[in-house]
Image (cartoon, rainbow, N blue to C red):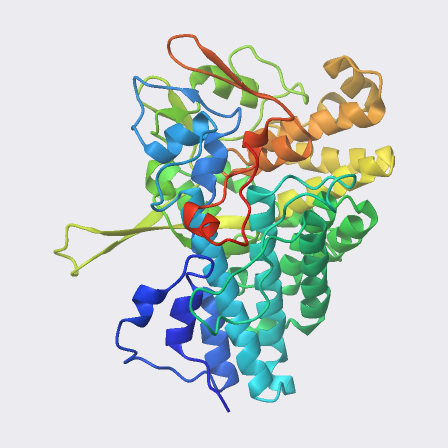
Length: 488
């Protein structure tokens, strides 16, 4: 029996990059993965430790040039102008690519260990988690480094390598599959893994794929894959009792009495019912997201939140709590971070860690509403949209604030019911998920243009067909002769 070792996992962490220099180190810390408990501990690291929010948010229309206030940063700057990000440090696309494939490697080693141990019933919950974690990491990669799914071109569009076996040789070569193939493999892992999950296997469940988290991921996956029936089916399983409100963030209730610092803690707490999957990332986002040069200005805040004379689709005041840094930069207090010092309490250097909400009940509600729209089930979509509005408008009154088809068509000046409701969903999602990168995925899926400006008044446009909407693969990955670059 070949037990899995930390040495192999370390090499796999740099898959597609090569790990020769790591093999040169003495392999003096070998850990046998030969019990269900050890597999479970291994899978703690099967989730991407990188954070996509910094670069994803900077590419959206949620930010502008706040030079007077902002911190200069290469990742923030290059992303704002949709250039290939030069930095490979934490919070960069390269860092996320590496960390996602590291998570995939861990999942694959866990699956191999389970197979070698005979795959008994006691291993099945961990097999389910490994399959879901592998599916999630590949899904995030294909949606950042490949074209957004298009049923007419997905069979030809360049995808990403879908890795299902542990690394066993140095400098192994990989090829890019198609986007369609990657989605098919994600579904295969999702379907195989979900029935095996057992929520009571975890000590802190929101940091793992529970059944509800897996169903939440499935709603996103099938919505992006343009399979609305499946998205609705899984959304219903996230809310088996139909009580959505009890599982939403209480912006009109408990949250409104919290201080900024208290809100940051509550937002990513494991006990917050809205948090279906939390991921601890090695990231500076939790300490710096408010004060980058390219951030949310007062003008954008007013547009996004319907403040300062700007309207929003509800006609009411949204209950979000916005803060201010300096004179021009605005934010919602969502994140906190932990600084791990090197050398103990006296150390002056270290690593920042930020917990991010990867899957939430609010997203599931929006995903189901959008799936209903795809099927022209507009009354069902309105029911979900108005459930959301009821928990986000201060002094909510259904007769005043609820959305109707007539109200949506009039507000957006369009005649098509589905188009009007999609616009409403996108506008409601924008303040809900600000700073979380969700807007970038909506921009990709709905082929929205983005316009950025600099302080000199120059305008930069990312059109619907611009190839820069797809992140370029890291240079180290492109050194593999089997890996093609994305068109530019």
